[in-house]
Length: 268
Image 1 (tube, rainbow, N blue to C red):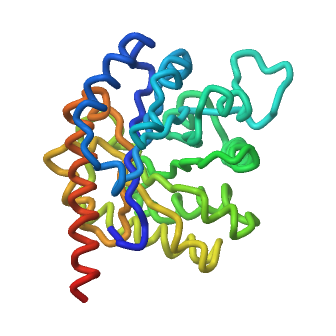
Image 2: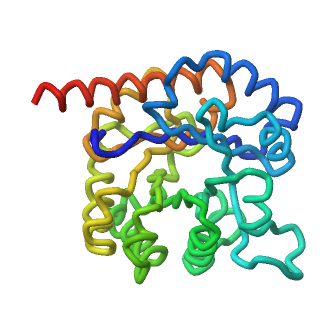
C-alpha cells in the first residue's frame, strides 16, 4: 500500500443475494463499522434487483458506496436486458465494475466493449473499476504482463489525465477467481508494479492516483500479505464478501494497514 492513496475494498456479490438478503447483510455489516470507512473506501456491488433496497438503506450515511457489476455504454435504446449509466446513478450507484473476467469469458465482452463501458461510466460521473488479468495458460506461457498491458492499453489509451485519475484497476488472475486458489502476494505485487508502469506510460503523472486492487480468492487470513505490497491498494472481493464477518475482517485489515502507513509517514 501507498499512504498517498486511500485503500479501496469492493464487494462483488456476483449472482448472489435477494433484496431481503442484501438488507440482512447490510444490517449486520454496518453494525460492525466503527470508523473504518474514514480510512478505507468501501463499495458494495450487489445484483441489479438489490440496488434499490440498498439505496434505501442509505449506505452513504455510514461512509459506504453502492456499485454495480456491469453497465451498457448507451444511455437508452433497444438493448434488451441492459442497464445504462444514468439508470445506475438513479438508484444510487457511484461505482461500476467493467471488464470482469467472467463477463469477458462467459459473455464475450471484447476489449472494445470494455473501453466503451469505461468511458460511458466516466461520462456519467461514476468510478469504473476496470478488471484486467491473465488465464493460467497465458501465465504459464510467460505472457501474463503482455496480456494485462494490452487490456490496459485497450481501455485507457487516449483518455485524458483527469478522467484517467478517476479509474480504479483491479488485477484479477483469472485462474484464481472462484477457485479457492490465490496468487502469492509476491506475484500479485510484481504484477501491480507492472500495471503501475504501464499506467505511467498511458496516463503520465495521473497514474500515481490510480488505485490498483487485487482480486482472486482473497480471505481474511491472507489479505494483509497482499496489502504489504507497495502497489496494491486494496481488493476486489468475491466469495469473502458474501458474509458480513469475513468482509468486515478485510475492511478492518485494510484500515489497520492504512493507519500503520500513516504512522510511518508521520515518523519520517
